[in-house]
Length: 332
Ligand code: ATP
Image (cartoon, rainbow, N blue to C red):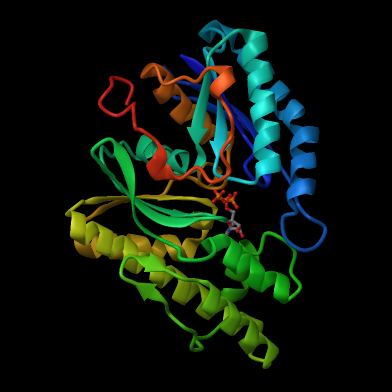
């Protein structure tokens, strides 16, 4: 079974082919990089409209070149959450390709895909997932047919919060990698640490980080402390989720998961608890169509397809809205 995945919820126009028999994943992506400021929804949607045809063509050419393995059995696309103008472009592209190839359409929740790619790559059966991405931050666990949100941000996504700080200091988007580089030369300064039960908040810490920078504290020190605080908050809630559920497997998802220090903190916590930890390789952590194709294949195997007439996108599509049809099936 081979599935074409299409992703484009925010900054990354991406198409992928996943072959369920060989587990090969071909991914072609084109990133939107704003000249200044953050992601502008209209510009991002224009980027999708310009580049999706090219990345889809590349994926379909790959599928054709490896045609011995058979054609495309379905088109899976990111249905949400994400920026409305981008999602509408992705949805239109997916419907057009599915209609042209006369194959079923699979509507994938982007955040569940961030989780499922970790489950798929690790082979873990029933992990807790920390999704640390740009627009989101939450801890998920499976119970009774759904991925439940065990903890989440009370304001901005973790990556977006970091990006807001870097915009303030004049660095271009995305800010996360620049903070990681600067933090290597930094020392500890105090910042707020906000965990309330199973939830976290990033807005106060970002304002405090901006204030420190404005007061003349070296940017390297602010970056170092930003990482230490924010990642400790994520690690604390992930640990509490493991403790409360008694689960002994953790997977990491989302673009902020590319950060070495976050992975180090999570790995240390898991080692201390005797918990198995898996962070997928970077190409599967940041937004990518590979994770959409992989989950799409599982959903297809479970018969979880969507008619074109009911395939509207949903910018606020929460992971706990998704009936998990594919677990417990043979392809799960
Ligand atoms: P979502 O998946 O919630 O829709 P998104 O579309 O913004 O979020 P992702 O690719 O998951 O996309 O994450 C992008 C974020 O990851 C950006 O905020 C970026 O700054 C951050 N990021 C990328 N690399 C690093 C890094 N090395 N350290 C910290 N943050 C990083």
